[in-house]
Image 1 (cartoon, rainbow, N blue to C red):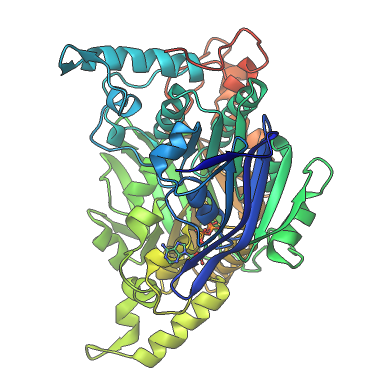
Image 2: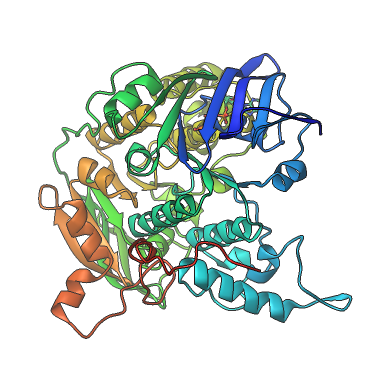
Length: 539
Ligand SMILES: Nc1ncnc2c1ncn2[C@@H]1O[C@H](COP(=O)(O)OP(=O)(O)OP(=O)(O)O)[C@@H](O)[C@H]1O
């Protein structure tokens, strides 16, 4: 690594970065200038080059051209450990924690606490609990392995790990994608506190409201180039969106025109011990039903049961009035149920298969006759899906792993949409997807119900649920606390219901609002106002 002195007031200064992958130019002279002590947003549609630019900064990709300055020093031949030693740390989209590690091991990886020649696991566990508690005011299950934690908890471990290294720049690549609103508020509170303590933050997100609420400046990327730097306080979100996709984003939440048909999914008294209890829920044909709840509310587990991934202990499920037992996803699929899972990169796509193969994997039978695959029908169906979902791919035969994260999500979605089903269960269908593609996905959902299917959308994006659903069921502590009809729900009411605030109003003694992390806690967003709260952990 070589270094010379230059512009001191910028924490990060990337200038004219070019990165070519084979024939594809992912970055075409992109620049990113980040003032010290600011929160700087980076936005752009799926495939615009955000992650690639960040990976160049992280020393993961070597740029083909351009200049990188960190803390005023021009640097070259970066590798990830050199970047970390310069104080730049990353919370990546793909969470890079080893699933078999305990929280302590993950937190202190590379900086293990030892007793003589041996790892002192107990000390690491204790210290990990202290650190996480002081930063986030949460208690993770003692001795838990990473694989046993939910996404929000894993993210907390990742952020704590980065903060333990006393970074000067922290880069968040879509950090709130899998968090519910309350956790998002907590995270935004933490980021503000970190900024106020002098840290520089780069923040990548598809949620423009977050960008508006949090960032001091925003760089907009389009087709591998920066096309503007704006002050989000002075620039309407719609204008940022327009500059991202280079066109006006029309109606954000297009409504379907289907009329309500027969009940396609009827759930009565469904119970899975320790997850959900006595849940009754119906979805009609021609209807979009939303389901939401904080992590631990049971909504996720309910969806797993509806797709045969977890057998309930009691209750009944009927599809088109016929009682069914769903012992496996295969049985669920046979009954006409399709699930688009949330963790699409892990569960939803085969990275080394092509876009076409992925998109048609779940519906090969549709394209086969007498055991032969009709390539023509397959090709035209895939072309239509690529077009409908605006999947940015070099072509239908490109490997899924070559696509940007958001475009991989769209491929996973395409896979299930290409299959004719009676009931579609979509788990966080628009996480990580850019604003233009979100609208396309909402239109597709409308098309599905207009074609006579029922759709159940599990989402933590309350605006989205309000925008596209006919009814929204909110779960709290394993039960459906309330089902709202379209028109009577607003995000405050949904959130109050999801956090149990409504129940607390009724039962003043119940102070234990369930949060993502189990126990009753003080929200960090509220704590952020207290100047006594620690912003860094001293080790
Ligand atoms: N390793 C790779 N090999 C080939 N192409 C790649 C590779 N990594 C990224 N690309 C391509 O570079 C372009 C930019 O991808 P990148 O992941 O940076 O986009 P992004 O803006 O982060 O998108 P998203 O919002 O979907 O995460 C995409 O067209 C992607 O297909």
